[in-house]
Structures are given as C-alpha cells and as structure tokens.
Amino acid sequence: MPFIEIDEQLCARDGICVAECPLDLLELSSDKIPVAVAGAETACLRCGHCIVSCPNGALRLDGQDPAGLPAVPRQPIEPDAAIGFLASRRSTRNWKDKNVSRELIERAIDAARYAPSGLNMQPVHWLVVETAEEMRRLAGLTADFLRQSGTMARFVEAFDAGKEVILRGAPRLVVAHADAEGWYDPTTDCILALAHFELAAHALGLGTCWAGLFMRAARHWPPLAQALDLPAGHKVYGGLMLGYPKFKSHRLPPRRAARIRYQ
Ligand SMILES: Cc1cc2nc3c(=O)[nH]c(=O)nc-3n(C[C@H](O)[C@H](O)[C@H](O)COP(=O)(O)O)c2cc1C
Ligand code: SF4
Image (cartoon, helix red, strand yellow):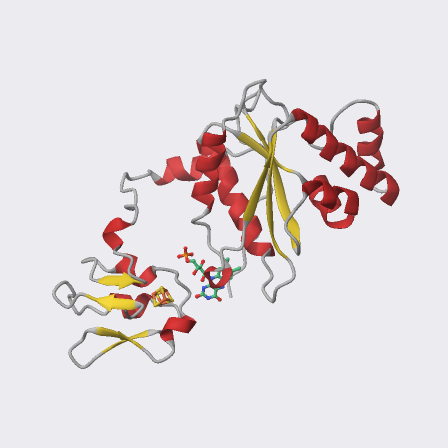
C-alpha cells in the first residue's frame, strides 16, 4: 500500500495538498492528481497537513482515513475574548485544598499534543508528580542544590525556615522530559508543549506556575535527576506547578509596552 493514497473520485484537482506539504513531497501529475515524489515516504514528517487540508477528504496517509480524525472545533471565539483569555493567565502561588483529577490533567496534556514541534518530532514525555510527600521531597532536593551551589540564598533561607517557596506547596508538578542524547534538540518543543498545557489548564480553571528553580536543579543536581527516575538518556526540559488557584486577579498587571521594530 502506498503511504499516500488518493481517491480520484473525491479529488477536486485543486492542488491544495501540494501547496500545503512543507517539504514539497507531493506534485500534480498531468491530470492534476497529486502524486508523491521519489523518496517521499521516508522524508515525510507525518504532519498530516496534506490529508487535513483537503476539503473533500480525498487523501489517506499510512491508511488513515481523514474522516476518522477529530473535527476542528468551529465555534467562533471572539478575538477580544481569545486575546483577553491569553492575557488573563497568571502565575499561581496560592492553592485551594482541592484535588486535581487525572482526567483534567490528561485533558490539558491532550491539548498540548497539538503544539508545534520541529520536524513534527513530538519529542515530549510527561511526568505528573501527584503526592504531597513526593512534592516535598523534590522541593527539598532542589533546596539542596541551591544550598550547595551558593545561589538564591533568600529562597534557601525561606525554605529552611519552613516556607515552601520552591514548589510553593502546589498539589501537582507536571514535568516535560525528552531524550537528550539524540541529534535532535527538544528544548523548544518541550517549552511549547508546556506553554500549550498551561493555557489549556487555565481554560479548565486550573492555575500553573513555571518551576524554574526545580528545572535548573533537575538539570544540574544528580540526586534530583535520580529521584525523577526518567528513562535512560532523558532530561527535564520544563516543569509547571499545578492546582486550583486560591485567589483571583481582578485586573491585568502592568507590563512593559511592546518593543517592536519592522525591517
Ligand atoms: C522549533 C520549531 C522549529 C520549526 N521550524 C520550521 C521551519 O523551519 N520550517 C517550517 O516549515 N516549519 C517549521 N516548524 C513547524 C513544524 O514543522 C510543525 O510544527 C510540525 O510539522 C507540526 O505541524 P503543526 O504545527 O501544523 O501542528 C517548526 C516548529 C518548531 C516548534
Ligand atoms: S504528511 Fe506532511 S510532510 Fe508528509 S506528505 Fe503530507 S504534508 Fe507532506
């Protein structure tokens, strides 16, 4: 079976799939039916743009009928509402004592599967830390790292005085990790996936905060890396504290004016 199949009855010969392929792996034959170029099957990113851009569902990719893929939601989102929603995301550092279900976390992770990734590599793996005991252990190991590295003394002092300023007493920690030993650098993709995750979490009424101290320690402090028990060759590329926000913001906070230059 060819990796791209065209239903010539459905094909409108409009060339959309050819235009949409990021690697020019499709071309129009003399009768305007798309055909794969030599070597396309190996080079293909499996990004799916060819099959999802066809208005008639005339292509199959690796046997996948586009009719079996989820529909694109069509409810219009007013621009003001969408942009206001993005601006309303804040870092959460105070949490309700309320359980965060796995179902909700998995819904946000599912949304993050559609984040862009270089060459459609989709390198991200997820670790969800969900017990208070484990959260305290990871915060403690992060404090150990800061203490021995002689940095962020204020945080260490506060932590040692009993104020959990590292993972902020969050109910959950969501970690993005990936293979760090291959040729591909997954840094940007992991951060993008987490950025999508946190916006999806916000849409679901959850709050997040980037766990910067933890992220740094996870990279540089072997006891913390070991505690995470990642697959061989994997590293932490980002982490978000997660839970229900205890307080609301009533205004957007002040931010710098955008600095823009056109060339
Ligand atoms: C870090 C990064 C680099 C990318 N670089 C390119 C690029 O140079 N050219 C391009 O056409 N697409 C680029 N992309 C887009 C990816 O190919 C695309 O996200 C992926 O195929 C999945 O498709 P989607 O974004 O439509 O879901 C890049 C994406 C990321 C995250
Ligand atoms: S899946 Fe993406 S890369 Fe592969 S043929 Fe279709 S559009 Fe091109």
